[in-house]
Length: 401
Image (cartoon, rainbow, N blue to C red; front, side, top):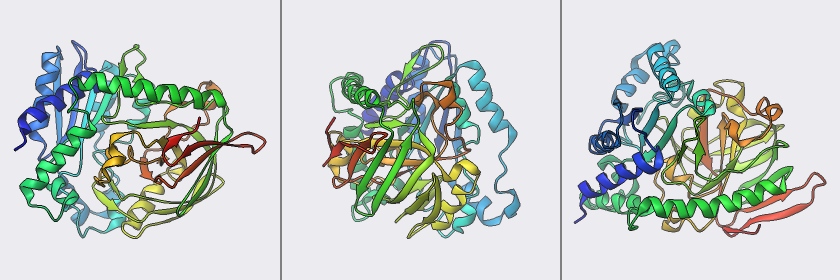
């Protein structure tokens, strides 16, 4: 039988020390959900042991969100209390740390809710999140927190206790908790990915073309677009790793140049709603057709949030050497599933993914950022020069560059 308490403690240590890299004297804000109390408390313990000045926990209840979506006046569903926005601004001013504990804690919480209404309420995601990220004032990390509800979603045919054990086993594996020193193991993986990112940046491709089952998309890049692995640095020079786990290389595309179509290869859980069978067509950088077998109205509502919500803010490539894709498990959690397959994101871009002020002024801006997976072993990725010359980047999940 698994020792859940030990795994919870080790995951908390990894997220606090390696992921967010919480510093002595910092305020740490934790966003969590009902059902994730054990990991939340261990995160608080780990942060205080590292000298955190204060750990401020915000616990979100998706069942309360359901009541709002079902009963509130539709005109109020976009409302976000100012104190929530101000709290994040205060953390930015304080140069604090932030940790979010993800994973569908209660997958049935929004079952039967009108998808269009569900797409109006994006909480606990805040409209100023991207602004704070782009300022580089906070060191932050998003990490998974297993729950019984999540386990039943991933392994519906298993006994609940067995499903919970299996989820913990796979989370521990993809987070490298089975290594003698998980942080060292992640540093080694990050260094490997950073070398590939540097090679991609050096080529200065004009565009990237992605072709696979149901996908043929060409995404333009900005002149100074650069590629990053899973680490980042604050304006104070503090290195941190925003996602645990992370297996991707990502960049900021030109929001005016995306043409073609994509078909998602994995379902998407976004702001509590489930979306599956996504197909999006792009023209001139904009998503002109948005469809899905499940949750299409939710995705359309999100893509209509503002002008940038229907344009690309991120392009990410994932090779086959990571631990997530090899499992063959769909986790129904973007944090993990996006690191199993190459993906794109509608909405806001990361400004540190371009080198010049001119290009920073051009990156996509939006109140939303929604990743969905389009990669598979069959996906072929080419870099295109300004003259249209194609250079293979990924074949069968293996880097060609």
